[in-house]
Image 1 (cartoon, rainbow, N blue to C red):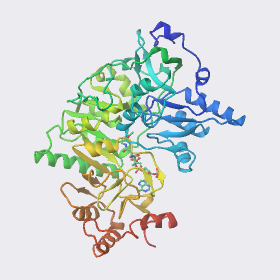
Image 2 (image 1 turned 180 degrees about the horizontal axis):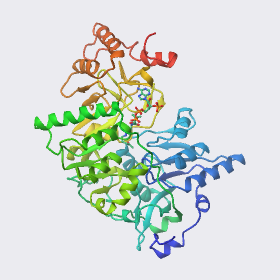
Image 3 (image 1 turned 60 degrees about the horizontal axis):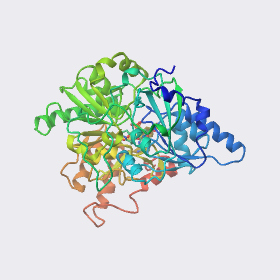
Image 4 (image 1 turned 180 degrees about the vertical axis):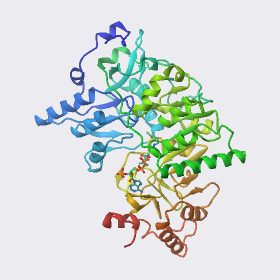
Length: 503
Ligand code: 0RQ
């Protein structure tokens, strides 16, 4: 149905995805919206992938550069990667087919702090953007665009791209209209302006995206749901991690370092992050606030149970059940959830001013508190840094959670030296595994090592870490003791034998 397109003139631009894909040529750079399985186009990627396959079959080259908000879904990143239609990708992904192609060297991938993406687009650091492909839930009478479940970099991509293709998805709830907050012009240095968000729920812009209507070359109608991945029920491991965080919050409230309703919470993606929020349901804190990139099931339920007053995010990433709860309660939720562009959501300025509590998952940490969020054994990309760096560097608290071991115990997530650095020891305040917590605030590297080895490492690896650390302490530089030739030997052993433990 065309009712969602209230601007009469724009209805003339309606065409099929295949027709719209004709605007996409080999070598172009595309700005495609999408953020952790929300707000991504549902039809164009398949049409572009099919075009790529046809071109390849005719022995002609066809591939594009794709800059999104964050991860999309199999029918976007997956389709395009499978068709060999992508030569460059940024700034975040989590699709298995795309990931395998990145790690096989077929696709160049630039992994970026999400707060940097829009400013670097504006500053021309990515070069020229040929086409923007965005998902919307509707278009107003005067041609303003109503975003769907995620915004990401939509506002910027509309500004920088030469041509715009809009997918209007009628599956998205029409009542999303009004839930977004889009501010337009923060400018570029030396004339860049402050972002005037001083409270979690401050509205600073308009509920609509705007663009030059002459740039819109195609509108495609879709009727399809978002990725809506299911979450695992919190397991014992996640519950143990969540309990420690909640106890710690109580302790900080008692010590007068946190207000009774805590500070705005940011939570990373995944099961552990979701379990922490689920744990807050029964915790002695009320009137919580969320200031997060991705709002998942756990935070939705805190709002529905009135434990949380309101939350600001850039995307809503729900399981199928949570989506149902969202749609059933959208009248109640409309003035409790605000969706903003990622440049605002992840802004270092705002995160620091609000005093956000950042909670993210990690791949591994070393005994000094450096954290790797992105690389498997130092060389293979997992997903990307996403917003974890924005919240870790600038948050009031920066927390990393992880099981102490991976792959059935063959990998220790506490290692002598991280195989890739995403978050440095200067930024990381707390590491929490199911074994315990290391509070690294106000500690030197050697004080940190004691805490991480004793509290966080798995018992199977504690003696090995202790042995490395003791020998490093006899080797020379005693500020951050290391045995350089041995520091990454645990990873090398895993690569060679499939186990970090010495057989
Ligand atoms: O692999 O599924 O093949 O077994 O890594 O690990 O424990 O399920 O954890 O799903 O929470 O993901 C850091 C990747 C954690 C994620 C990361 C293997 C493990 C498993 C996943 P299998 P878990 P999670 C806001 C914040 C960066 C972006 C971010 C992430 C798989 O949280 O991408 O924080 N973070 N964004 O077996 C080798 C280790 C390992 C390991 C775990 N030490 N070595 N493999 N694994 N530890 C959102 C956005 O920014 C958009």
